[in-house]
Length: 340
Image 1 (spheres, rainbow, N blue to C red):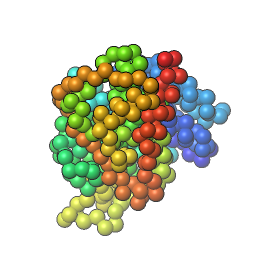
Image 2: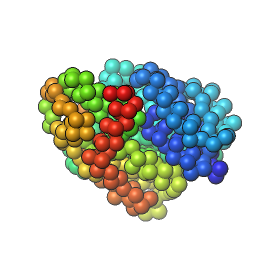
Image 3: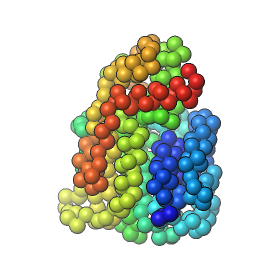
Image 4: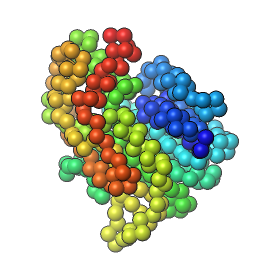
């Protein structure tokens, strides 16, 4: 086994898929997740069983730890001395951040601070951490690229993710911690999160119940298939961030720095109209949706679209899974997992 990789949020949608890929290529993985009840813990446990099934003896360790537990996290860093840390643990969800802002402050700010301290004091070779397309906020200049300013978040979740980028840059600048932030664009696929549109739509369509279509369907999302996300994360894990030798402090590039810190979009670069996505879902499930058209929700944005040239230039990869293929895979898994 070549390296020890600490994956936080290892029972989550992306974390579990990433852990399986790391194990498959011979890495040792230490998984961390607090298994909270933001959504059904049974789904998280099922994901963990999938991970365990792919692990050879001694290659997988799981600890039910919260990022907010600084003492437990410090002890784990000291014991395991990970070579790479992939921080995917966070309080997720835009709308929930309006209901429970304290959860975002504790997990996404306090908890991320503990991760940075662990990396600083235990010579971690590379920190890869999840940011989000939500940081682009009220920006309507599509497609989004990393050189654009992200000064207008429209939810606390988005603000916490921008704060993560600033915090990571500071640790890179002060302590030389190589750090790569990845702005994920609307991830979907098998084993997805139940609070996100694909799972909500599938459940309602198969139950013959209405689905809520916000902003009366006049929305676009850059839906990105889980396998593409994981491939991008893996490639970034293998190429630690470096300082930009051409960084100009008189014209600073928000995507790079004079410190070893970089930020990349990971998106499919093919934004899909919400009503078109629903149509693809209907075809995959063989059922028509009952649409309940709703106004725009607070904290939401009208459209997202990723410019991924920087990622492609850095690691030679760009997501490319067509929405029809990805939704078909998701629908097949959903019917099997939930027996519908």
